[in-house]
Length: 254
Image: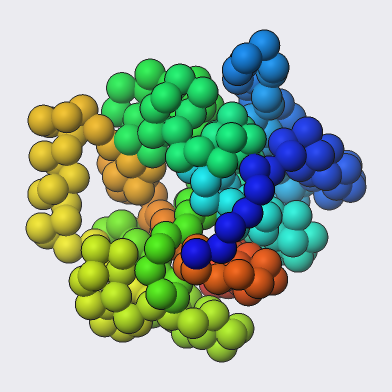
């Protein structure tokens, strides 16, 4: 597994804020306080007058850093005039600073899309309501060998397979099994299926837990959760799947 230091959130935020104001509108959606320090949750919105909106969530889990590291390259690469890019980063700034999965309050933000106890989940909820995305990508890392993505039931099957092909052509190694050890067919894709949806409903009823992918599904919005491999040591290889997937989705939904 790649070993990384906690992200310098101040430096990261400064780098995001430095992007060209003519291309992007950058705002502080909320601040999260931890040990008398305030950490911002930023939104970045491309200024294109486009018919489609692609929402990207980066850094939901602070110890899964590849998505955060990829955001500058994603913003630099995005040039579409037909798809408006909206990014929330870091969704979990205290987790990023601590290299922790959990938020400042000790919660897994990606289980809080039913009760919205955390300010971080409330930011994402409010951005959903304001931006009305046509497609959502949430950037994560997992311990499996290779990269794969979960798709909710509103992701078109042919599109999901085409995106896997796009990643493979770009040099990403696609996982043959997910981090539960379940076989992926085709490699790289864990589609929505009836048993999985039933488990999600059980989670919600019994434990009051819900992830972003289910929250999107409730709103009939397609979402992909990208799980790159945290085993990858080379930073360029770590971030490549994230950059390539956002570019490929933007191109294919335009």
